[in-house]
Length: 158
Ligand code: MG
Image (tube, rainbow, N blue to C red; front, side, top):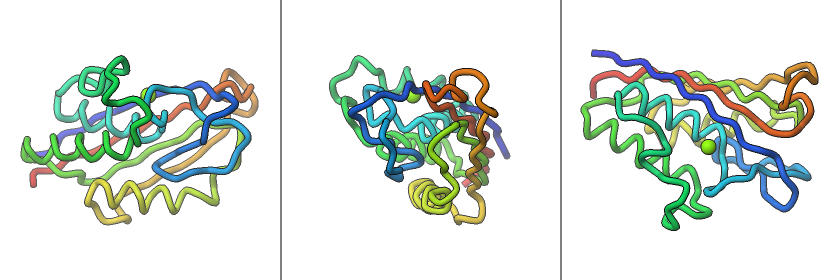
């Protein structure tokens, strides 16, 4: 009746790109590089849902060499992933995610991310949790070279 999945993703921070996290634009001098809008948090969530469904990963469903997905808002990828879950008889029961970034400070934007993710997943906001942590300046996130995200999702029968 329940299925659990985990997702992890990393994108590089570069100049000349907007920083989109959880569907929310975060003001910063750098943005994430990728074929889509490179929303690392939504990618991790898509992978967690696909994992719970036993349906592979985001790269199989939305290939990064397919022009159809160039510059696409990752919210659309999440919408399609949630639709796939529903077609398989599942909805998002609850979801917990962690963004790993040294900068910028994300606390002021977490609530908006939760609201956006809840809306796309058609789940109550109280069942969606988004956290952010630094790595105490250790490793690639700590050096500001990129941002990572983990997500765990529980799907329940619709
Ligand atoms: Mg990605």
